[in-house]
Length: 184
Length: 335
Image (cartoon, rainbow over all chains, first blue to last red; front, side, top):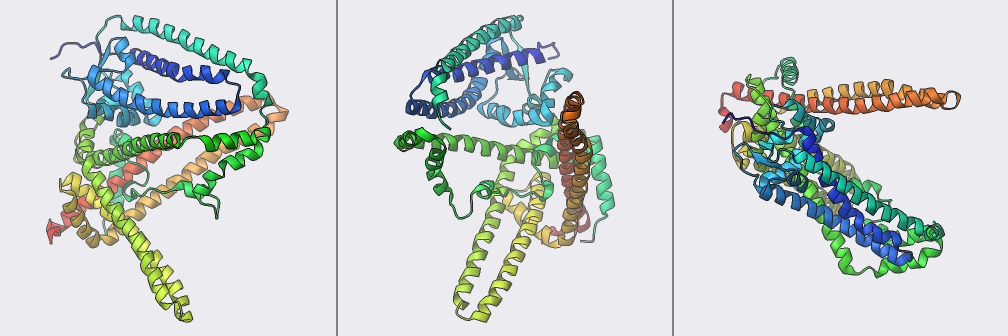
């Protein structure tokens, strides 16, 4: 019972959150590549409207997807990719209810007082943030060099995101005369 | 019930806050108003609706208004707006409703969890037990459903009063409207009566809510039992309860004024100096501006902690009043 468990550090958890953010930003940026190339006013409006719908769908989807994936596999995509698992002390994964609580109430608890709850990972012996303490969970390391994999993944996703962003930017530049002709 | 010793209440509440910093988390999430808060949502959007114009009118006039500033794109925008298929509007409404529902459910759970944990945490702290996030949060989860149900019941009571009372007023007015002096008298007396009814309903439900929450958490009662008992306790402790509310309100006001003064000194004065030195000494202005921004951030953190402490203070005072009632009455509240 008293064996030393490999609890994930603050930086590993931050790395996994960065990977999540980069995956989501990639999904959100891709449609903008198409929108940036449109130079017909009504088609542009149509696509902006569709993009708003897309954002709302993605926001809803991510919420339910994270609840499911944490409960079923023990972590968000970022955590799974670098070998981190969210679990109870007895090793069991969270139930759907616990997962929902972690993503809503838990985030509110840790986010209060300007994210002091996340910094608590540095202080706590089991590297628990406040949202872990609320749910009685820990984040453990399943891969010894997961952070190296994480760094490679993060670089890859940064390059992909930059590529997409460059595509959007060039589209906007190409369409600059069209935007300049819009009289507001 | 005799008037409690509020100086003792205040002293104990301050001690509880000082010795149990974890309670600040629950205090911050329990929402403003502490024991005096009530879960009635305020429709802020109505304040932004221009007078004499309903919201659907405003929505319909969006393309028209936008068109006014779009020059050559006027007709294209209008055409596009009206050509959006109904299915897309429906999808937009559904998605916004889903996200709003998630948001509302989340806020309700967070608030009631925090309230439950805060009341239990203060009780444990007063008994000298160890209070921390891990040990206290299970109490929040244990009573969250009951507290949500209680909030809904009390909301329904207040809502019924706010709907029924004006209807009765209108009906009586319609009956006597042909008798001019009587109708004028009814307008004056009726409106004063309505204000008095709303005020009484607010005070009574707030006090009942505070006691019912404690009966659920500290005495493990069912919601209906707690509500019935809370009405009895409210009737018996009305003056002491109002005074507790006044003490909490006075503390909030004093601290609020102190924070405004602090804000004026820390932010207002340097901001004035930034603007005055903007042209004469831009470098000094930038340095001063940076420090002012940092001071503002620190003030926001500080005031959020103070706000949380005030909530703990309010809840602690209500807990003490509740406990004192049971000590004084010796359990005769069942009558």
